[in-house]
Image 1 (cartoon, rainbow, N blue to C red):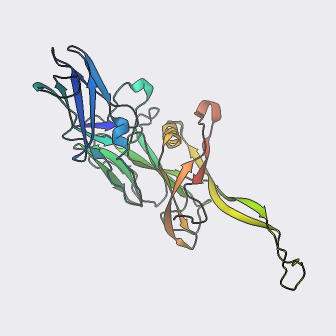
Image 2 (cartoon, one colour):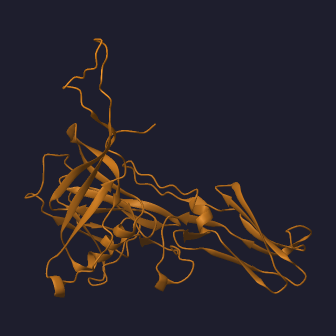
Image 3 (cartoon, rainbow, N blue to C red):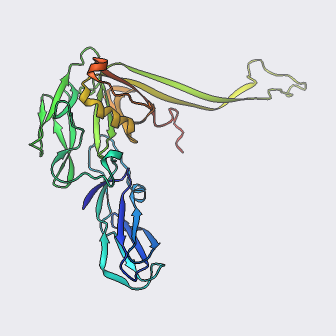
Length: 337
């Protein structure tokens, strides 16, 4: 079963045999038949189905602090050819395309070509630092965390502890180097593993990845409102009067939103792909101290509002630091009904 990345198109094809006039895709998602699609053609014609958008309807990534593999399966899906143009009549027992995949919410780039997937074999599911020719992550001192990797056709999250400087897990040929950052100048009175801001996002491989922002944080609250003119005239006393304490302009549809601006601190040039993937991610969470109990952490969904990314290099910029802005992915005033 291929491990496909369905934020990019996935094409499945069949070539009709002589005399056959249609191809039928039966697409199952986690063993439930969801789609039956018929396309007509003629013998010798190659008929192609694009299935990634159909699969993504059923792929919902969640994160509440637990790192797990989140996929859907298309096992049992097939493309068959039929004698009639409307997908009826005898089917060929010989020309059957099996569409058995495990789908991840990742993507490939244009230069990587058609039908991107995770491949096979053991590998870390983070970008390699091509300048240092190795895998590196940058985390606060005395912090714990995880790094995603593929092993035996399944995604796992290798855990590192407070004093670890390397991580090998089940990928011993490729060690992840853990670079510890001293955050004593910027740390705050918060959980021991949350001295600075941690962003968790779905990366290009379709798995959860952590990225730390070590420098300052700026949080703002903005509000919007609508007003209307109210009639405050009272005739209860037998004559028209009004109270000077009652406003004639009243507010309705008052709402509020929060945003947070994070500064990354200084990263090496080889970490640029982490920030690019964060910019392109559709699902992001911020781990922050809980306002009502700063000793505890809470995980909140955010949307990155920064819309452009300029690659910084050590030659051009000397010290590489990124500032990114995030909107909270919910209204500050609870209006969930």
